[in-house]
Image (cartoon, rainbow, N blue to C red; front, side):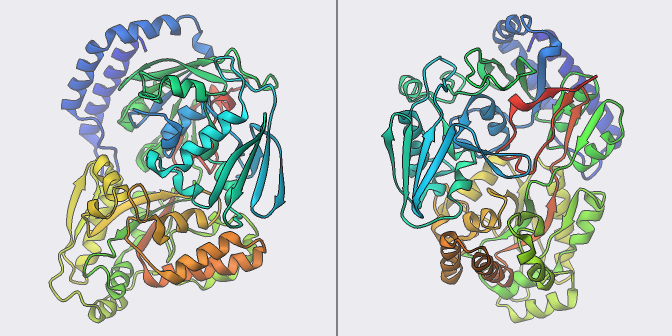
Amino acid sequence: MTVLRKNRILALALAGLLILSGCGSAQSSKGTEEGSTIEVAEKTQESSKGTEEASSVENDISADDTLTIAIADEINNIDIIHAYSHWVNLVLNGIVEGLFYYDNDSHIQSRLVESYDQPDDKTYVYHIKSGVTFSTGDPVTADDVVFSLERQRNPENGGELSWMFENVESIEKTGDLEVTVKLSEPDVTWQDSLATTASLVVSQKYFEEHSENFGTAEGGIVGSGPYKIESWVPGEQIVLVENENYWDTSKTIDFKKVVLEFISDTSVAKLALLQGEVDYVASLTPDEAHELEGVEGINVQTPYPYSEHYLSFNTSRTPYDDVNLRKAISYAIDRQAIVDSLFYGKYAEVGTGLLYGPSTVTVEPELWTDYFANLEKYERNIDTAKEYLAKSSAGSDLNPVLKYSASNSTDEAVAIIVQQNLAEIGINVKLEGVSASEISTLRYGGSETRDYDLLLTTWWSDYPDPVGVISPMFISTNNIPGGSNWFEYKNEEFDKLILESNHESDSKVRAKELQDASTILADEQPAAALYYYDYLVALSDRVDYEISPLILYNQYLGDFKKAKK
């Protein structure tokens, strides 16, 4: 990004501050304040050399051939073992490719695999496509595939996706372009794992040459995707340009360059979109999406990414280990008020007794119709809430601390509603906004770091299947550092049902096992589902791209097209 372009973004930021100071609302993004604007200006001066170098590249490719995306979170590492963020994956999926991928209908399709055999229910033999090359021109081999999968599999690497490989017994090269994976037990979700970023393949040679800083701005990353890194100025931007060695000649890449600009304040990103400075803004607040709907030249999309927002209970801490208290809190919350007041009644659906709704069931959903119809909804009922509170061991003087993301104004507004609701049953909630990094530590740091009573947080399903929600969050073996059972929840019958469902090939039997496991969660309420929300995105009408539900994994920069005029 040139210094001139950065100054235009700064001007938009200042304009946004003036506008927001006059019309702030509970749902508006808090984002950049005056002090951080000065900091951005200082960063611009410090990195002027880097931006000038980047601008020489930008000038070689026309504006019409350039796609500019606003990235809300600063990206520091794009190593594939940390590919568990939709922003990181958006960048990675332009550079690196996996064995399989999800299409826009959430169906699994082949990417680097020509075909595969399954000689038995625990063995998969993958035949890698010939002629695939990395951006360096080196061929993609079975060695690269084994190396990449083994890095994901090894929990000592500290990756967020290692849990997907817990059932893997071995990964071996069995031919120049053949890889065989053996599982310890049959697993009907194994192929789903390989359609995520867990199967991204990088160059083993390049990694070994850059092992100390692989995936960073200094070390970079090499894959077989349609783009490669041209420049990366930390805290400012990543510039990708077309990979001249891209192997898939059947694919037309419309945008020869992609500029990913770090703009943490979505209100500023929205203004940049309106001014034509960026083409794509995501993670909009409901207010921002509502304001952009109907604006000429802007296309607002609201896919449902199998996501849910909920109140987490620390079930290892007294008195939140008491199911009666958890039920009392769940019954006291006015979910409908949250959806109506914060989401315009259309960008979210009211949560029920589970952390997933009917839309998450994509395989034979008719097997689930009666189950969802009869599921306890936990609709607000103050009398019922008081009855459960009286049954609990909490006592009459309960003052829990509810932690939430201080940088997310919607979270703050939700926290206030929850606080008001619980006051009606005599629970005095103290609100504590914390940083995004602290939220991450509370979630993934392990038992020793989970210093919370109540926690507002969110989850996007790993698969278009209930197990993509309930297994990683509630199975007891995932209560480890890096694991996502931050509820400290343990139920042996639940664990047993999840493992049985993973091994079951009969869809009717499997549905019953997942329903039984889900009923345990609905009854015990280790988390209170608040709402299932849409992912709010706005694109310039010069861009043709449909955001799909599995946005965590399947945003592919190579598929962004120029809109037909």
